[in-house]
Length: 202
Image 1 (cartoon, rainbow, N blue to C red):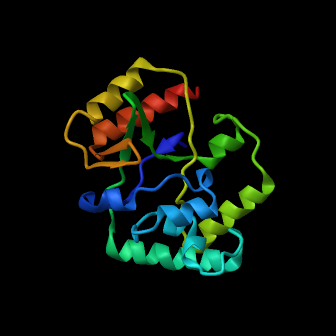
Image 2: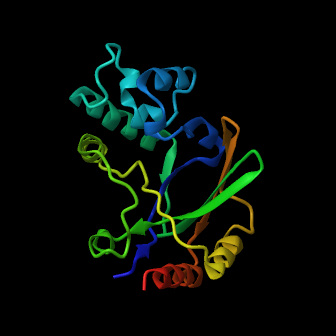
Image 3: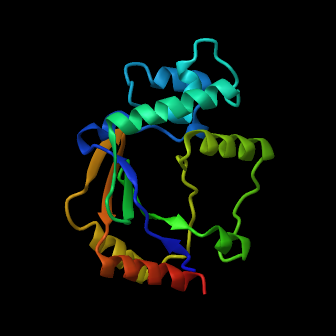
């Protein structure tokens, strides 16, 4: 089993990506999320912090919030998101104040985590784990990626740079942060990335 695999992402129409962009669900509280979605009906916070659309401000883990998240997710899928035809990797770049970070979006094997090939880097709270599990079950999608790091590798850096050498599929800015995305679907490039990351875990 490979450490990582490509997948068929759901991603926004490039022309409307800036309208969908949103901060991670856990860096804003409910009040901040409500303020952030004013005038932004497509903000992903309507999915990740769906309490913003409920008038009585229920707790974020209330069942009504998960039902609202599922409804908002379906509406976003129907109106703005499209699914790629071919399984792909995605090079994702964020730039803020002249500092640039580049990574790869992929699926990772749970078995690799269980066997210690992916190392745990923090202790998570059970209530937060339950909240995320309920959210995944409600929307039937993984909407909050886990961030993994690895030691610097010149080969991977070169592969990512090559994949991001052309025009970005998505180029949008939110709150001073520029987000760019490239898809990697060509079989040789997919295989090269798979092997390069596989080598990190041996």
